[in-house]
Length: 270
Image (tube, rainbow, N blue to C red):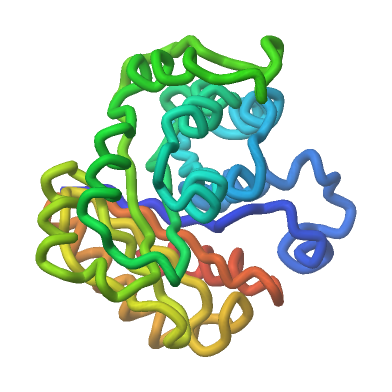
């Protein structure tokens, strides 16, 4: 039987104050408030810039033991370099403090731009570079460049647990048999990305892990999920978990503050 983890993509949203967060709850306690009510969280600030080790240490301090924290890979790797020549950028990413999460580190998410089609050689080279456990990530992190000052780099691991990777492409060519075969060969999950028709929502099974991102079913990043829709996702998650797959689900419809409420509502159904 697989596990099911549900959370939100990010938690530092001022619009949630006085709605999901009590109005008098200090910002420094927002993450612990989320961790008390959900079973995982996705860090998305790491997509926009390299975080500091202090950010990851704060996450450790404010979450329970083995509370899985998915980490979103940097857009410099995915959107600017477009997966090419990313040895050093990957080293910088893993040296930025990710290793401090230890056993809390959940899947690492790599979101691709919608105008990036499947290229077998490029994707294969990228997947070959990804570290599959913490010691391998530490060895990679040690190759960081001077973009990270010595006091900002973490290049040692406190565990040797596995590191799982998931890919969120937004081009339909990633549903091809060749792309799916490559993901299966590298044991990488293909994200099911729900949106109002903006990107394909892949449903293919490429490993024993399922990763779902819910961006808003009728209005991107904004609309909430109706009870019937949450019921359908709950059924699918039970089916996947019943087949032995671990499931991670993150709500990204944060613009109007729906994400945390939908996450709690889905957890209630599970």
